[in-house]
Image 1: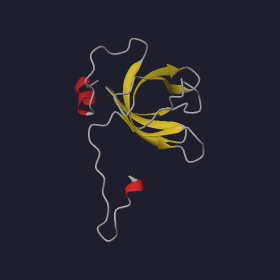
Image 2 (image 1 turned 180 degrees about the vertical axis):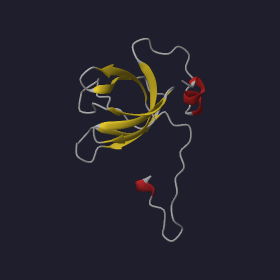
Image 3 (image 1 turned 90 degrees about the horizontal axis):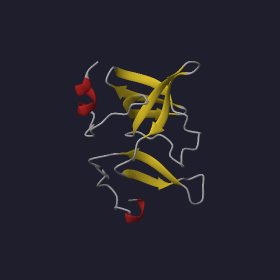
Image 4 (image 1 turned 60 degrees about the vertical axis):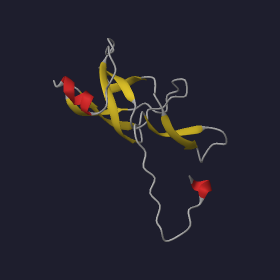
Length: 121
């Protein structure tokens, strides 16, 4: 167990959850997430189809992971987000799709071979 590992991934919080293991999502992939915990890297079920006040896990989220006897490691809840980068969900009319959460820096890169379309930012 390496408590400094999560600090390297941006954990600045104080108390850790009592109801499971703290982790940070580094990748979301259709129903499963790769995340980092004090014990290293872990692949868990994201349960992103479940409604949790309309919060589906996203890359960058801090989550609480529990060990389900039947399913194995499972995200039980998503902690409050400091910020998000999102877009309108292309498949829904008014639903927000979070692309990444809890980011400190965003870089936007655009080629110089064509004009910058402000509407795409």
